[in-house]
Amino acid sequence: MVLQFTKENGVATLKFNRPDKYNSFNQELAFAVQKALDDCKNDDTVRVIVLTGEGKAFCAGQDLAEATDPNGPPLKNIVGEHYNPIVMRLREIEKPIIAAVNGVAAGAGANLALACDIVVAKKSATFIQAFAAIGLIPDSGGTFFLPRLVGAQKALALMMTGDKVPAQEAEAMNMIYKAVDDEEFDAFIDGMAAKMAKMPTRGYGLTKKAVNESFNNSLEEQLAVEEKLQALAGSTDDFKEGTQAFLEKRKPVFKGK
Image (cartoon, rainbow, N blue to C red; front, side, top):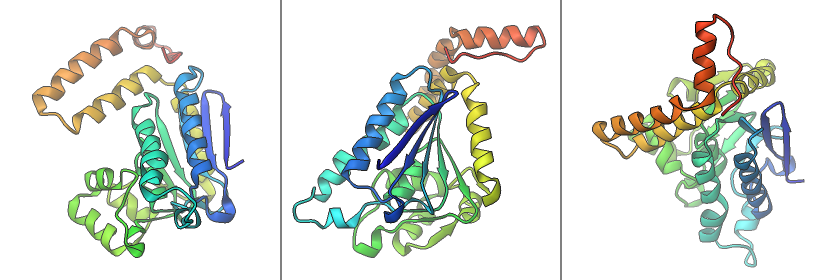
């Protein structure tokens, strides 16, 4: 299996499983990820999604053997049919998505991580915009997300130089949420995912939707979005449970509805 897909206690884990190729993407893996994300979207028992890699790498980007195969898909199809649908799913699924970067994240692999809601990386992991080295531009949302995270000048420098960015440096420049000691990484991801799986999933989804819409809105437009989505959040069972638990001085039991 090029993708290990498991569900347990509200947490769905998608683990890229081509360790001998540093989890580089081919068509089979891309379509498997798309299918798994659709499953997560439609399964109400899934309340948080984790993307990670098997072995030493998170994802080394595109499998160049496929990209240069005269009988393989052209670059336009690789970007438009493999990566773009994944990025759109990552942003549109109204559930929290954690990129657990266990090793090198290069090219499309780095940008798929940055398209997730929260990025946590091992301190030994690195992020590389590897496209310039082969004459390409960053894809998989890289030209959208990276400048918004670190600023245009820093993003362009990383894209043009292809410099390796260690996880701790990535955290310092606000590229990722947190860099974690390697020996503590698995426990940290498990704890974060378990905690989020018990939180108000619908509220998380509406928060994500609000942030997505903020990229294109004026302040006045965004205030209107907050007003609309807050009304929806206030109508959820989780809001009722949260307020009732607060008044009763007990821990809430959210059901993600």
